[in-house]
Length: 374
Image (cartoon, rainbow, N blue to C red; front, top):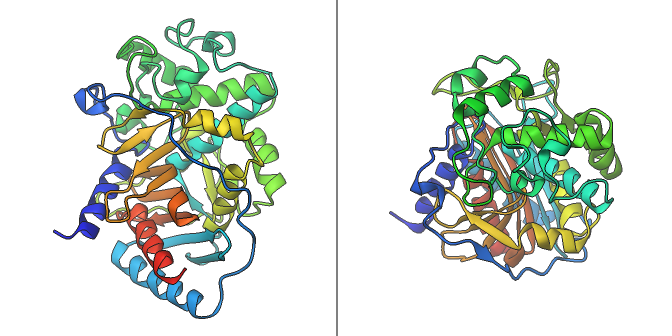
């Protein structure tokens, strides 16, 4: 099998394993037998510029997009690229009336951004025990905010029971805490790694307690409005999905995005998502020292070459490019998304699709095209 197909299959696997309703089993495959990865040598860019990619380069990206969209089997797609000193490109195929896509677990990066902003403002500390801000968290007097960010708290996920999410009903945080309380800690806080959607729902409650307003308002006023992300919304339970491309899956019932909470509540088009990551890596949302700290200690995830920091993922790209992706992947029944910065390619790529294909495969294909035209 060629390297390209191996890469596509591997990223498809990662994306699905990180889905909001997919159980991550507590076993050696969670990375406990592999060491952490320290001191990632990354230099943050100072600026990407804002020119538009036009002419032959635009045509080649449009052609690659059309091919990759067809190969994905998706019913809707939104994709965008920003190349440092090269310009911007974006294209979407959405149903009538839709202007945005759901980004699944990519939303965790937004949750982490706001938590880190509050830490920079000295309104909370990453070493705070979560019990200081949220009551009823199992072992909350032992679990820190930093451990929730890095998925090292030992907590499981209420979404480990896919029936709870796929029914499409909102699960209150109190209900989720009871579920993970019955599960018990999978390991002592700080000693291992296990992906926890409930951990990020707890972080959204921390934000509400510290910022003294609903979580969605913190996201919107701290990120969407300053960056002019007009297509973006932060969903909460019971929100209408007007303007959001409906999820679709041939393999079963698609998830209801409004139940995701702090684990993945963002809807947007790809252009706005790319501009968010551009602002992030340029240091306009967080100090550069904070961003460096988010990737200073990386925990091995399920798949070899996938690593998790404090709300951010690093992927060793398994193809001939031998590059890194820094950002976040997301996936659930009916949706797949990726938001990444590739330092070697000097490029940001955002892709979300509705269907059973892999957004990461589309992103990988677009980056290959970028390398050939810049």
